[in-house]
Length: 298
Image (cartoon, rainbow, N blue to C red; front, side, top):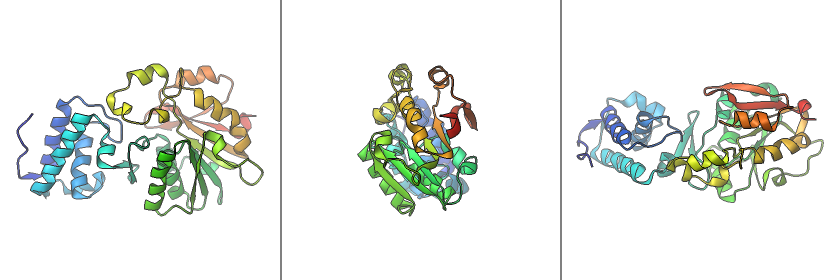
């Protein structure tokens, strides 16, 4: 192991030392941080009780000996366990918003979050509209949607009661328990029977979509998450087939469903060659998130 960290470090120096330790350990990233440097910032910011973004304004600040020790203990825990940092810290950040995170649900992350925050979805959400977050997990997307559109009602459902327990904590944390309603069950079975008054103007969904070969090849960090929230069957489309088959029943006449499919573009095209799809532009490109209008599902 490297020598113990110096006892007098600025935030910037601490970040650099931690990043070097993480780099040397050949970890995998993608759970809220894209590389060792951004994970090191996250570790240091937690000791300051600041967001990673706010910590950037304190890089010259001296850290206490206790903060330095805790930061390096967290670093060694990350290296030895290969768990996502969000599980170790109990918190994740998505689009600048903090969420409780635990091994009961996958770490908050989704390209859909970008579309919510940049306003790309607002044309499908009339005032007093209804939205659904299908496969909500920790509730992060439902919460971001409720924050972005405070005049809509959001339903959110998941098959996992442990995940919904995390979602409930996050709703309480952000004061949104009255705007977002949670439902437990397997996809559409979680919801009341659809009728004229309870159909949705927009459905968002980040379902399990990783194909079987990719699941087998995932690094340890991803295997620390619930497989139920990741595995999408042989071609990644098992749940997406069920979602698309019943979506028309739950969408309003001018509604739409937005689905994240990650790296499964080719599998999606093979599974649904006839459905007209609008591919949405996100930071990863234009093959990760798709939108289907209700009129194109009938």
